Each structure stands twice: as structure tokens, then as C-alpha cells.
Image 1 (cartoon, rainbow, N blue to C red):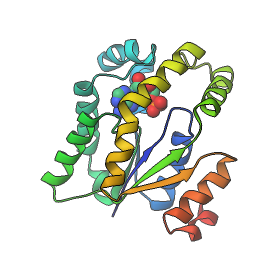
Image 2 (image 1 turned 60 degrees about the vertical axis):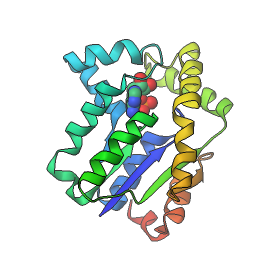
Image 3 (image 1 turned 45 degrees about the vertical axis):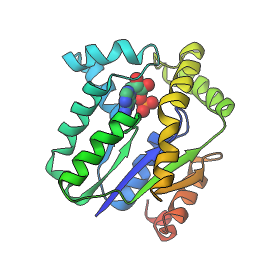
Image 4 (image 1 turned 180 degrees about the horizontal axis):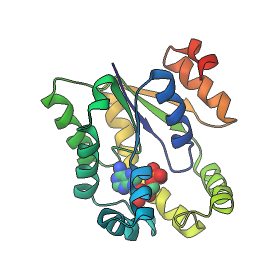
Amino acid sequence: MTRLLVIGPPGSGKGTQAVRIARAFQVPAISTGDIFRANVSEGTELGLQAKQYMDTGAYVPDELTNALVLDRLAQPDIAEGFLLDGFPRTVTQVGTLDAFLSARGLSLDTVIQLVVEHEEVVRRLLLRAAEQGRSDDTEDVIRHRLDVYEHQTEPLVALYAERGLLVPVDALGPVDSVAARIFVALGRDDTVAAV
Ligand code: AMP
């Protein structure tokens, strides 16, 4: 069983790498951003609520996000483990995940931190905005998202480092190189060829 988190600023390639890591470890990748976006495009009540926050680069409130994740973690496929992409992002969310795990006698194996300079992140996100037209990828919103990340999520890096779970990986460079670095850092360099 493998229980992993991927943490990193917006534009660090979290989503892309999360899918690869999950495939290599044969666990479901759970992306809160993807779940929110799917709800927005389906026009669900949750989507309507989440959209107003996402569009400004703010975090969706913890109560909504925690409920969404707990609901997802109640699905049977997580019996084999999971990879969480983009959750937890606040200290309160860490508490929710901790409580979920400890109630089941479970723990996390590793927290993969994607390390990238913020100016590089802005550059990448502007590029993605041009390519995909995401409504939360304008420059103002990008800067706000980074600011929110610094204040609310960066403290989690120290927290998981203290717990001895943090594995920082340089996220600069081609997707394949970053993936290879991640697998080496996880002691699974043999998996690269398989993904
Ligand atoms: P992402 O695709 O992971 O960058 O997420 C896109 C947006 O979804 C974020 O900017 C937030 O508005 C929202 N979001 C995703 N995950 C979370 C979370 N764990 N807590 C609060 N908001 C989130």
C-alpha cells in the first residue's frame, strides 16, 4: 500500500507528475483541483460554490474541500493506497487528513515536494493560460495564487519535513527528467521505463 502526497506551487507540474507517479505505484490520483473543475463544468452546486473562489485564485473554504476529499477517500479504490495532488493545502486540511488516517490506523509514506522558483512558475502559468484558456490563469490571478500558496501552503512543507516525510525534488526541466528524479528519490528508478 502506498499513500503519497504531492505538494508544490501552482505551475510546478504537480498534476502532470501526479498522474505518472500514481500510474507507477498503481494507486488512484486524487486531484482536488480536477474534482472542483469537473464540478464547475458540470454546473453542480459544489461547482457553483467553488468557482467563485477558484476564479480569483483564492482557496475554496476548508469545510467544502475537506468534505469533498473525505467523500472521495470513502471510495473502495483507495484500499490500495492513493496519491493526493493539491490536498492538503492548509493546516486545517492537514488536520482532516491526519484524523482520517489515524482513525484507520494508517499513515502517509512520503510527501513529494516539487521545488521551483516563483518567477518560473509565473512564466509557465502564463504559457498554460495561452494554451488552455483556464479562467484562473491571468497574471493577476496567478500572482494571487502564488501569494496564497506562500502564506497557506508553504508552512506545510516544514510541517511534513519535521515528520520526516518530505522528499524535495527539483521540478525544473522537461517533464520526463522531473519524473525520473521523482522515481529515483522514491527509490523506484526502475519504474521509469514502465510508465
Ligand atoms: P489546482 O489545479 O490544484 O491548482 O487547483 C485549482 C484551484 O482549485 C485552486 O486554485 C483552488 O481554488 C482550488 N483548490 C484545489 N485544491 C484545493 C485545496 N486543497 N484547498 C482549497 N482550494 C483548493
